[in-house]
Length: 460
Image (cartoon, one colour):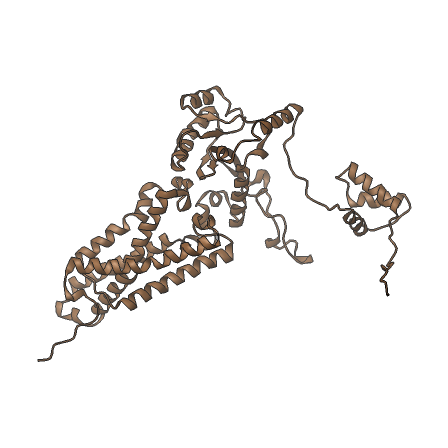
C-alpha cells in the first residue's frame, strides 16, 4: 500500500524558539507592530520579512484587527455594570419591549462617518475620488436627540445651541411623549437615558416625577449597553453614503429622499405627479372649451385631449389615487412606523401629509361627480393598470438591488414569503379599484354616453 507522506517544503525561517518569543511578546503587548517583531528577531540573529511574521502569527490563530473602542471604566463602574447585568439577567423579553431607549449623538460633516478604505491603483492615491477631505474640527456638525423602542423609531430632534437641563426636559415634552403615543407603548413603559449631568439635573428629575415616568436605573460609563448605538451607526452610514459637501447639505432633507431614486421611488410622489398631469389636462380642456366654438370640439385636437383625459382618469388617476389613500391610512392606523415613521413629523407637517394622502380621494370623487368619463373595455383598462403596477414593482425591486434599501419600512420587516404576498395583494387590489370607479361613474351619470365601448348607429 502506498502512503503519502507530507512534503517537507522549504524549512521554516523562524525556529520554534523564535516563534515562542514573538508569541509571548504579542500576548504581553498586543499593540506590537510587525516591524518591532522583525527587529527583535534580527537582534536574536534571524532575519525575516514582515510577511513571514504575519504568516507565523496566522498559523497560531492570530490576525491583525482594529482595536475596539470601549468606555474607560473605573472599578466602581465595573461593579455597577455587573450589578445591572445581574439585576436584569432573568428579565423576560416582554419587559425589554416596554423600554423607550434614548440618547444624543453628534454627526460630523467630515469625520468618522466617512469611508476609510477605497479600491485604487498605486498611482491614484491623490485622485479626489480616493481621498477624504479633512478640515479643522470636522467641518461642522449637528447634534441629535432620538429615541426608539421595540415597536419602532420615535422622533428625531436637532439640538440647537448648548443643551442644559431646562432644554432637555423641553425636548422630552415635545418629542418623547408624542413618540410614546405614536408607538402605542401603553401603560407600564419605562424610559431609559444615561447619567449625563443634564439628565440627572434637579429640574429634569422634577419633570420626570410630575409626569409619573418610570426611569430605568442605568450604570455610568455604559453607552455600549444601549441598543440605540446600533441605530446611530446605521444613520451615520446612510448619511455618509449621501456624501454631503457642506453643513446645509448635511442638515436638509430626510434620509429616504436623499438615497437612491430620491422622491421618485415613492408611490405617493408618483401619484402626485400623475394627479398634477391629469388636473392640468382638465384645466387645459376647460380653457379650450371657452375659446373654441362648440362645433370645433367635435373633432381634432380637443376631442383627442378629452379621450386622453378619460383614459388617464379611468385607468390610472382614480385607481392609483384611491389605492394610495386606502393603503396609507390602513397601514398608518395599524402601525405608522411601517409607512410614515414618527421622525417625519418634524420634516413633513400634518397639513402636507393630508395633502399627499387624504385630499387625493375627495378630489377624484369630486371630479367624477362634476364631469362624466367614458370607460373603455374592462380588459384594456385592467391591462393598462397592470402594466403600471408591474413597472412600479420592477422599480421597487431595482432600488433594492442597486441601493440595498426597501422603499417603505414595512418591506424591511417582512420575510420573503410575506413580501411576495404583500406585493402581490397590493398589485391585485388595483383591479377592483378600477371596477369601483366604473361603477361609481355609471351610477352618478346613469347614461349610455359613459358606458363601455363605442355606440353603433341604428340602421334606418
